[in-house]
Figure 1: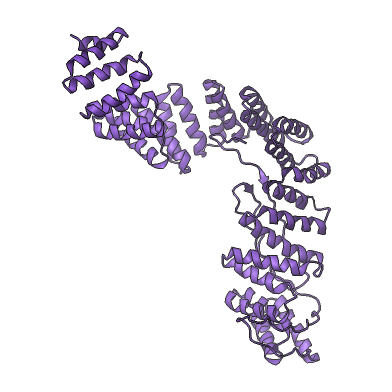
Figure 2: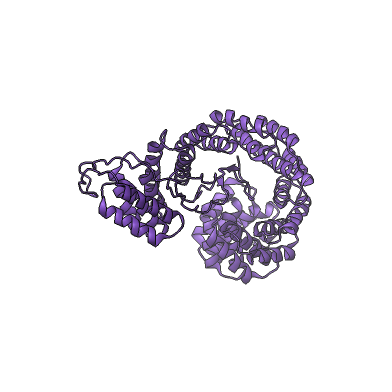
Length: 541
C-alpha cells in the first residue's frame, strides 16, 4: 500500500497472549514487540512463580556432555532420602510463600547433601531469580541443564535471564531449545508458556517464518483460541505467505464476524496479492457486519487508502467522507480526508477537513502542519506561519519538524521577513534536505544580498532536482556573485532546451556583457526583447 504524508500503518496486530499458569516451577518473560509494522498490546507483567502442590519426582541424573567446559563430571545421582524429600517440599513451600531467604538456605543445604539431584538446583535457581541474582541463578540452571539435559526448565529459565539482560539472540536460541524439549512432555499450559516466550523473541527478531511455526503449535494446543489463530494469520502474512493465511482469517471472521482487525488483515492480504478490488469488497462487507460507527469508520478509512493507492482519488475522497460521517470524533479520518482533498484539487475543502482534525486533536503537530501547508497554498500566509509556529512547539517528529519549518520559512519570505525565512529554511534543510527547501533558502539568501549563500543553496537544489526554475535562479545568484562563466554555462543550457525562455536570454546577455562580449550580449538581449522581455529592451538602449 502506498503511504501519504499522514501515514497509515499496515494494521497488523500481534496480540500478546497472557502467560499461562505453569504446571511446574517456571518463570516467564514479558512479551516485547519491536516490529514497526505491528501494533502490540501492552506486555503482561511478570507473574509470580507458582509452586506445585507436591514435590515432583526427581529426574535421573545425566552425565554432562563431553567437552563442556562449564560443568565438571558429577557422580551418579543418589535418590533423595525421605528426610531430603521432606526438606525439598519445605523449600518449595517457602519459595511459593515468598520466604526467599529460608528457601535459599534449604535448597543450598540439599545441594550440599546430594549435589547430583537436579531438583534442588532448579529450586535454588528460581529462588535466586526471584531475588534478582541473575548470575547466580544462571549458574544453577546451567547445573540443572547438565544434570537433566532432557528437561525444558533449564533452557527456558536461562532464556528468561537472557531476555532480562538484553541478550535477545541467546534468549531466542534457549527458548527454541526449551520448546523442543517441552513438546509432548509438559502440560498444555506449560508448553504454551514456553511457546509464547519463543514467539516473543521471534517477533523481536523479525523471524516471521519461525513465528508462524510456533503459533501453529500454539493453535494445535488450543484450536478454539481465536486470538492465537489470528496471530498465526498475521505471522504468515508478514512472512510473505498471505495466501496461506487466508483460511485462518476467514475462520476468525466466521467465529467473530464483527472483528475489525481481521477484516483489515484480510484487505491487506488481497492488496498484497494485487487484488485491490477484492480488498475493497471485503471491507464493504465487513462494514455491514460491525456494530458501531467507530469500527465502520476505521474500515472505510482503509478503503479510502486502498482506492487512493490505485489512483482513484475521487473514490478515495468519497470513502473518507463516509468515514468521518460514521465517526465525527475520528481525527485521523478528517486528516486523511484533508490529504485526499488536496490531491483532488479541493484546497478549501481540505482546509475545512484539517481544521476539524486540529480541533479534535489540538496537540497533533502533523495535523497543524498540514493545515499550515494548505493555508500557505491558499494565500493565507500570516495564519500559515502562525500554525507552523504552533506545530513547532509540540515537539514534532523529524519529518513534521522539517515540514513545519519549511512552511514557516516560506511564509516569512512572502511577508518580507527574509532573515527569519533563511533561519527556518536552513533548519528545515538540515533536518530533511529537499530541492524545494533549498530553492526557497536560496531565494531568502538572495533577498538578503548573501549571493554566495544563495548560490550554495541553489546549487544544492539543482543537484537534488535540476528543474528549469532552480537552474535559472542559480544562474541569477552566480551573476550576482560575479561568477559569470558558470552562470553563462547554465543559461546556455536553458535557452537550448527552451528557445522561448525570454528571461534566460536576458540573463545570458548580462553574463556576456559582464565578460566584455558586447556583440553576443546585444544579440541575446534582442532575442529576449523579441520574446517580450521589457528589461531586455532597456538593456539595448
